[in-house]
Length: 153
Image (tube, rainbow, N blue to C red; front, side, top):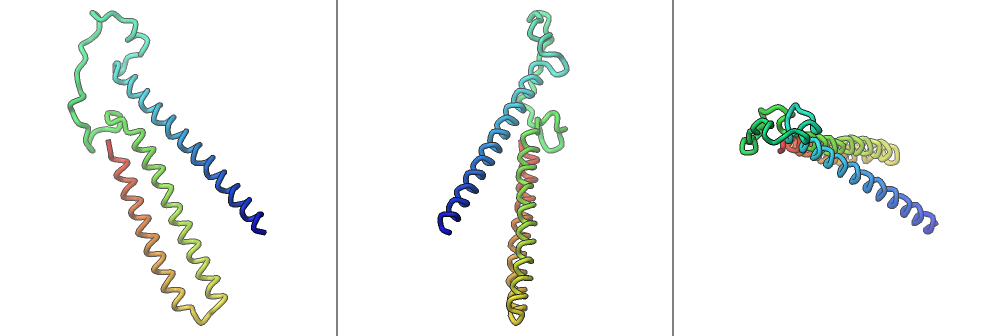
């Protein structure tokens, strides 16, 4: 029995590591794609990359330097290059689903506990409310961090 449980634990750990590696690979690809889009936009906004590379330097229009102007919260998303921050916000919001799952498991355990020992009903419900308060606090913190990620530079 111990060997079977240990084998299942190792299989679960291996699948978690594969999932983590796949997630990191996707995140790296998203960051590379965002950087390449930013590089293409910095060459000439509105012009094609090939036409810009083949044109003569004497014919090129003077480039304006916008690098010193900070893009704040009021700027449009296209000027802020906010693709990576939106992706980070979406990944952070996955934790809200984990909080919802935790609340579901908490109330399932309450029902099982009441079925096993009905005389402890009040104590179990008090502990359930305390646990739900912690989970709701965690969900609110996650939403705040996701908002910070969304509006970060």
